[in-house]
Image (cartoon, rainbow, N blue to C red):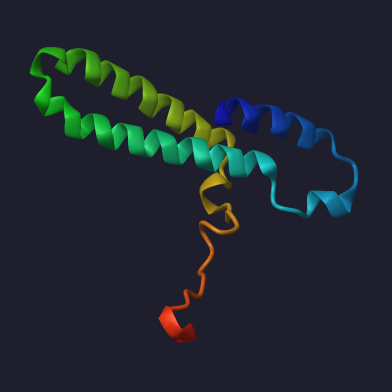
Length: 102
């Protein structure tokens, strides 16, 4: 779903004529970043699970190969996605400890 949103957002962004609006971070990059993070985590999880299901190794490897190809194409279509800063997730935040001390 996030990848579909990234593609549709990218199409809308290409139609934007207001130069000021074009200066904002692109919604498509944010959605693509979330999709890429999901793909990264899925690939890692399947790598961890594969030894536990030796009878399914070929199926799992095929799935991982397909997902890796989708990830590569996503990175090609959205070259700035990984650099997108998600407010509240990717920002350096100051965390207050008990008593208000930093």
